[in-house]
Amino acid sequence: MTQGLQFKLPDVGEGLTEADIIKWHVAVGDPVHDGQTIVEIETAKSVVELPCPYDGVVAELLAAEGETVDVGSVIITVTPEGAEAPAPAASPEPDAEPAEGGEAEEKPTVLVGYGVRPDSTKRRPRRRGGDGAAAPQRMAGGAAPDVLVLAKPPVRKLAKDLGVDLGGVSPTGPNGTISRADVEAAATAPAEPVRTAPLGGGPREERIPVKGVRKFTATAMVNSAFTAPHVTEFLQVDVTETMEAVRRMRALPDFADVKVSPLLLVAKAVLVAMRRYPMANAAWDDAAQEIVVKHYVNLGVAVATDRGLVVPNVKDAHALSLPDLARALAELTRKTRDGKAQPADQQGGTVTITNVGVFGVDAGTPILNPGESAILAFGQVRELPWVVDGQVVPRQVTTLALSFDHRVVDGELGSYVLRDIGAMLHDPMTMLAWG
Image 1 (cartoon, rainbow, N blue to C red):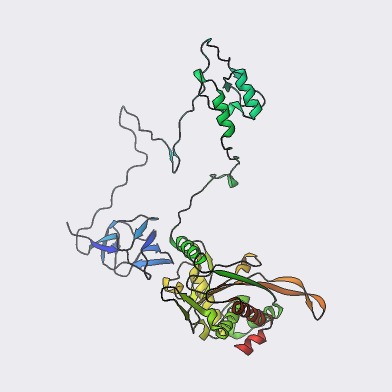
Image 2: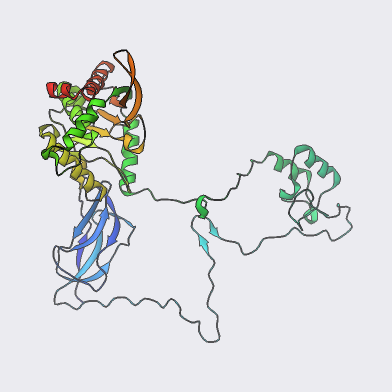
């Protein structure tokens, strides 16, 4: 028998230790060639398609879809060209008949996390003799029919005084009678949760494995929240002139092939602010006990995807013209939502924008992306009454929220950064003057 060629799960990103198998594009017995996409995996940062490095026939798939696999583990073996290929494993017939004279074995249904469903319930035994115990009585007052309760009159009085429903008490006395201890235990037991119908008619609860992008994001956010001392400041801004500038830019031939949104001018304002205040575009290096000031801007944009929040960044965004910045943001967002963003797209960010306004939200307190010292939340733009030259008039208004690492950015610097971003969005001519 020819030894199959083994393909091990590679580290497709810097320092990744595991990945989830999302989808196999081949099956056992399929021919494959060098460079052919054979599997999609999800790492902690992105979905990646892996090519086959061999020519031959698939011999084994050693990881199932949905399985988490360690980097370096063999996930597929390939029989080289010219060698005898393995036959695909036969699948059992789903509707096979039981052997003659026998019966098909019936296996109990197992609910994951709950065990085997019992086939029947126990009934309380009826009193069988004249031993002095109280005679069985049927429940009254809305209780379920045909449920018998055995309890002596003093015990019934105690249950009434304590507000205990005897129909829900498990008896431990002789012949299935309820004792004083049973009633007292029921009175001190925690209340059962109120049972209501599930939403949408489905199961009452659902468990979603925490893996891939969602796992990475959760870990990163917890580490950031409990490592960097966050401060968040808010500023409400009249952005009527910015909205007008966006409308005019959409008509320019320079932006004919890209959608222009207010986020573009927010991004430009952040880039200008980072040049005016480099310390906000810095990182805290705890190991070296140094502050690393970045004289370039890799602009992160938080993107909501089906797999969780992903924050890719535009490399050297400070060096791009406004049309090129618009194209870069659009392409990066599209690629991320399609699951095509690579790990490198999410590494090396220096400052981030999160656009919560697209969800109809005014503001928030964003958590810093790990390794960065500032993140700006851009709220929805709404028409609100605003005082202009002593007159109340309708204006387009948004709320900006800037979170920053107080080890690097003090309150004064953070306030200046937020103030200047607001000033540039209030009057885009200021952006041109400072930029």
